Amino acid sequence: MPILGQGASFLRALPRRYVHKQRRALSAVSSALPKHIEILGQQYLTDLTTNITPAIISKIPLRLHTQPSHPLSTLRNLIESHYPDFAHLSSLSPLVTPFKNFDELSFPQDHPGRSVTDSYYINKDMMLRTHTSAHEVETFRRGETKWLLTADVYRRDEIDGSHYPVFHQVEGARIFNADASGMKEVEEDNERLSLHLARSNIIIEDVPHISPTNPVQPSHNPQFSEAVAKNLKLSLNSLMLEIFGAAAGANSEEPLRVRWIEAYFPFTSPSFEVEVMFQGKWLEILGCGVVRQATLDTAGVSNKIGWAFGLGLERIAMILYSIPDIRLFWSTDPRFLSQFEQGKITTFKPYSKYPSCFKDVSFWLPRNAALHENDFCDLVRDTAGDLVEDVKRIDEFTHPKTGKTSLCYRINYRSMDRSLSNEEINHVQNDVVTRLRDQFDVEIR
Ligand code: FA5
Ligand code: MG
Image (cartoon, rainbow, N blue to C red):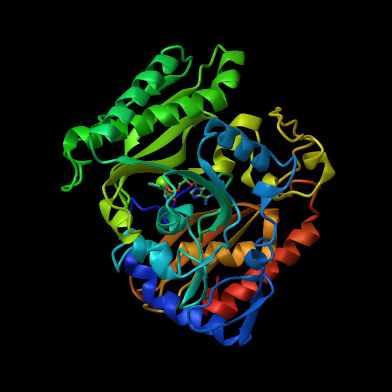
């Protein structure tokens, strides 16, 4: 889909032109908010930053990665068993300060991920973590040197089959002594993993461990950093071999294709992302890199060097179980849930593909105003819940005389578990249109 903001993607900057309107719109929303909201049994004061919606609040207690037999829980266990000597953490609260989510990880002040269009704020001092990296500093501070941490994370994002505002990540990290003993440990591990991977039936495209556009950190010994980056890649390739290996072998006409690409994160360098070929397209499954020394310094850890990764559990589970739509993970339909058993990876059998139904909405924005696509998507998600399959902007037009901008969005509705009547969808669409008019002051065309 055409995307204005790539969610909190750390690589691409968001267009800033929507900020003005979004402030006006949000204050309109906030004025309708209660003074307090309750999350996990605690009361929080709201303020002008508050943008968390009831739809999101209702997902917080669910913690799918801990629900027995759920594909996300089986996948978490599979990953944990691949790293048996790592500490395994999975019960940290999703409420964090922006300081923890961003500042501790060297995010610049103007990073787009901080904005209310990209992240869910309870109030200006408290937000829902946008990634499991939010817990890196505290985990390193506890003295852990090899650890995995699984958690639910939250982002205001586009709506389609592979993006959902709540998803699950596994963060993994390993640090070595920054001396000859550490270097020896890395090299021995690299040798062991290389031998193991020589037997792989997965096609892996690689990029250099370090390059001018993906540099070693100034405080690092380049050879050491390169060996650590190599260890990270070997470790993740071996995880992917374990996770996907059986599937790739079983479907030998189409071996699994994986590629490494250079990336940018404020808290790692060099940095990478991994993509896997899924349904004919490259699907990004994880981000990773050599941990920025500032992170370890903040955690009070000295004389260490290491790597970290953060992978999206839903994306991997979709490939592994052949689950075609990310909304299905939230289904409580027994036809979905009863297909899975704890510890077993099975191919999902779609019980039916119900017909979809699309509705367009066209509107004029007020003069000199704009609407961020994430604000639009969040409104649709909060109104229509999981009945919405995807949202696309299909037209944008600025009137040459009045200078006013018109937008047209196509909302595609489809239920995962039943047929929808036209009447029901008209109702939902009416609610979307009414809220759009009330909250963003647009003129429906
Ligand atoms: C991060 O979140 C970094 N914290 C990863 C990281 C950790 C980098 C440690 C370096 C060191 P990113 O925004 O790319 O990066 O998200 C990581 C993964 O989460 C993606 O590759 C994807 O698999 C998954 N993901 C991201 N957005 C969504 C979404 N809206 N729905 C489902 N999965 C998503
Ligand atoms: Mg990414």
